[in-house]
Length: 131
Image 1 (cartoon, rainbow, N blue to C red):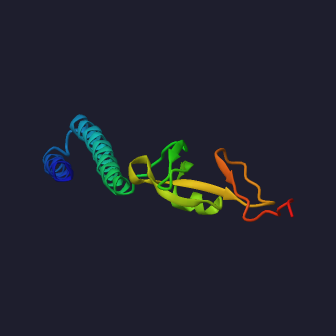
Image 2 (cartoon, rainbow, N blue to C red):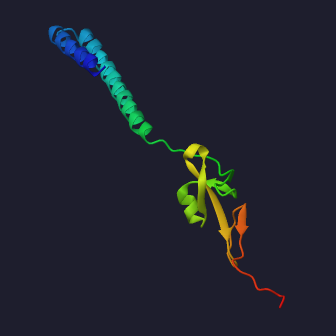
């Protein structure tokens, strides 16, 4: 496309040299040059847009819903990314979302807090009341 516009500019230049004496021809050629320059600028924008598309297509962002899942130890969890699971204090237990997520099982001990659904509370020891 760029070579096509270069060729048109060259033809314009040669035509302009041959008919510089006529004011009407000169104005017509000037208008033609403006149109060619505008088309050339538009073509450059299209080429740049295509380059940007190719660059952006390398980095695809994968999103998935944080839905219910069953972990590998038969405990229920929520589908998060591995980083989200670690941030929430959970344990990655199996995969979900076609392998893009982990089934995050959150287990709390005494005094722990969580705002996540499907959170387990485990008591590590207990005191017997019988003697």
